[in-house]
Image (cartoon, rainbow, N blue to C red; front, side):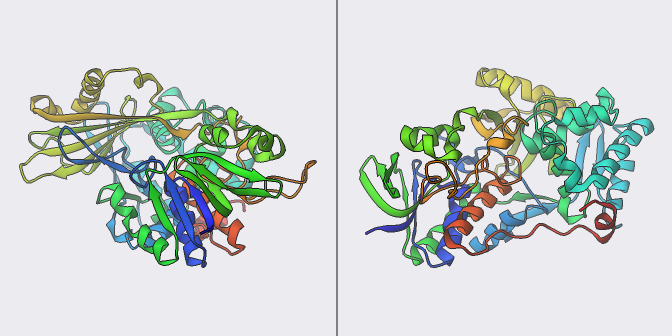
Length: 466
């Protein structure tokens, strides 16, 4: 039977597209190489301990409207725990507890910044000056920085090295998976303009209370009820074309025909799936080899007894940017999850060295950790965690739908693209992946799927350029 849409990849982009296609009357078929859904945002059973661990700690924020919409459609939004308080480690080992106030954005952050004793008064003035500039420029001003890095913006705002290290870097590296001197300024600016400045809820942090893979279980029921299916363990070898465009795909088990093929795989894999003669005529496929990746390292630690009594902690100025408290089990053992984004320098280290370095950073926040016994430690390297959202790559991020304009008659008909590396207007995040899936569903169904951005407070809207 010919499928309406074959979706290559069962990550967030593929799941988002499949759910919206199913709701629109299409019969989507997801072809996923792995035996589980979620792509890079999933879980696995640790063979050493038998415990289900997330690949990495994935966070959503209040401004991630499309990701919340997908969770709502899957019926799992109540599995997200929301936090409006952030805990920051100071150099003296004490904690700054940052909770936004009740005033409309951006004034809601005044209280949090006032309580940030990590910075002195002069340094706080630097931050306020840069945030005011970000607020006032709005999206139009942000677009003027699309060919430059965020470090160039910080330099233009006379941000001191210490403020960059202890304030801007922990936020930017965690959100964009690149340091300020590499990330496109538009994406780092967006983090502050869309999340921290417009309203209190926009900057709230959502953490799944269940393993990531459990969030995706309801998708199969939605897809199968529409006449589609999910095939895990299915390896796609190539995308098949004829003179009229897409014909289907070729898997390890044989060919599958479809009217539309949606690829949600990373650019390097897509580059191997498409024949050279198609890449020559499809403008979206001609620069796939330009994309580079940025790694993330997650380190799971199981301690024999609790050492950290707060839900999470930011560690500015240290290699470990975040540590998350995953709770205490029935045996009284505490599960901590340390995260290192833009982890290029960690990829060649062995697990023993990684754990030693992580414990060194965590002991600054919880000295008692040195007296705890490590019951189990597991480092998870995601060498290709995200695409590198640099200024150089922005012009080459492709649209979801094929263009009908071109010297060869336009792009390959019936081939659609999704993935956080596509042209979503967002950096490499779960929200960006879901947006790409929704945009692909829009292109296929000719119906509106993308969810509107979270509106700013009346004051933030008044002060910001639109």
